[in-house]
Figure (cartoon, rainbow, N blue to C red):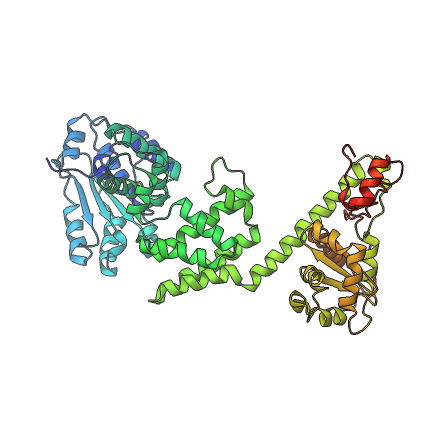
Length: 555
């Protein structure tokens, strides 16, 4: 016996086997139980959602010898005869190939005759929207004055193409896409019956690729069984379906988020070389971003994109989706799909809106940090430490504030023009200090003071050394007396101070905004005089080797 496809082997034969259409099934079962059967039904909805199967079950139920009953018994002569195709009272017609007036007139003429065995003649017309206008008009006459022994069940995937005159004479049932969870349960059940080895991730991938159609899910399962050599994996499903794994999508989104253009393009190249269609890549990216958005707005039990959703802001997700939606429309009428998706990736990385979103996010995060710092300072009990209080700060927030209050933008721009030349300073005696100075970012300058920003505290301490300062003044004031002092702070502290200043500064209302009192972590280091109260041997060592070479154990 030849192999029978899974979707045919496991087509529902009873209402209880129908997946994902509980409302429709319950309505029809109640109508059957109370003998309130209509003369015409229209079943609309996506492909593979059970329209034709439910129509056949309904046809069997109305002709069951135990009628009225909410479920065909499946055992009586009529049920068995209909199932085997021996009883000709159930007539299936494909409107795609029988869509003319003559075919419909023939149906109308034959409908007058009584059923041969059953209680009703049932006409199931599939893809009824394919009928011509004349055919619809011919069908309308029968629907207006139907014989009592005839039931019409019209099935369609495009309900909008059905004339209103037909719709108004039928009981309409809208079949919905079947939930991924319901599809996964049915696939798992069939795999257990058929003793098919499959991973849970693979079942999930099948249900996702089915896009709401159980028939599509079982057809895909059939293909994957033929493709796989052993236990069916998620990767097997993606290879057969041409879809993308969550790992590939996460890697691509992560490269876009990190602004790694070459990495993103390489991932795209690999996907295309592995046979992934560009249209599928785009749609899968949109679905992945949808899942990221759901993760941010709702707490999901399981999310494949948890890590990337934590990185992406809601605004950035919306921006990415907008670009991909536009891309879907743009590639419909072009042969250069690859070029279009590459441009879209560059846009997702470098568009000015992305930079604006990044800037806004940084400011919001800094504001949160500042508020958290303020709350922490209010709540934290003040502990007086004699050791710390004894230290004298090299730079304070007030010092930075005074420079910002009287900042000279033009002077800063002019001075920064020669900043890169500091790396190759000609004076060998000042070369090392000039190189240290070049590592800084000159962020503000007033009439006689400037603020330098470093990535780390060690460079700040080095540039603030009093001997180093003398050399810095020689470099900066080589041609004219520009400054007489400067301050250095680390970038994280500067970001907080700058953000507060920029957000609260107003030349008319608030020209001197109050900055948060941060510990800038730079203090004068008191050098110990080891000559005081030391043994003669220590004093001799200091005199002979030098104070900087002598270290006393235990101090």
